[in-house]
Length: 239
Image 1 (tube, rainbow, N blue to C red):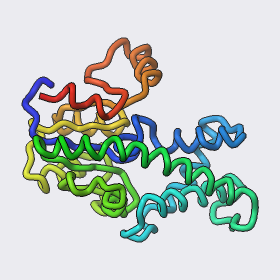
Image 2 (image 1 turned 180 degrees about the vertical axis):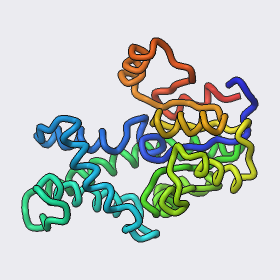
Image 3 (image 1 turned 90 degrees about the horizontal axis):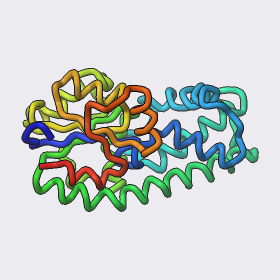
Image 4 (image 1 turned 120 degrees about the vertical axis):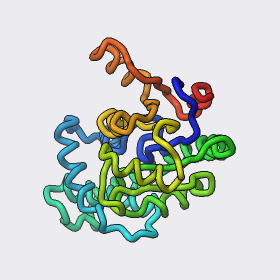
């Protein structure tokens, strides 16, 4: 780190619940394992058709399991040929339930690794979560056992601003009594997390699998920020 760090902000999806792989890519991988042959672009269209209706429609107390099962159900509807189509009585609903269960198992494995990490970090730094989410981020973090060490959870749907808008980061800093110049943002999205950190003049650490790191380096020639393959590697970068 080039500066003294007093505050750590984390993305949620793809960062705290997985080592650098976003929900869309994870869902696509699970569907491929079920034999679904769709290109990334084709799957993205179905994913966004399933994802967008969840914004503001989930109860504030909905945990991650409710969220992921609702997303999987919407995905099955989108893949069956129409958003909102009832697929509760066909084989695809069973496929969606399997995929949701596998997705949640992966997330819980990440939480089990990351809870002790956050506990340790909370003894040295202010911690916050800043996420483009559905309106139930606080309930999801509490249900995952992440809330005790994390002081602030800023949900784009609740705030009315999305990353990389500086407003969502400013809300977290204000709630924590923190300053941008002593804050580090950790996230998996370059357009949202890195760009948001740049706009706020915060330090940034990218979490990404090795193959994604390699592709970015090949495309850009180098990286202008630290990168880790697992969130547990973050401690080695911190002062």
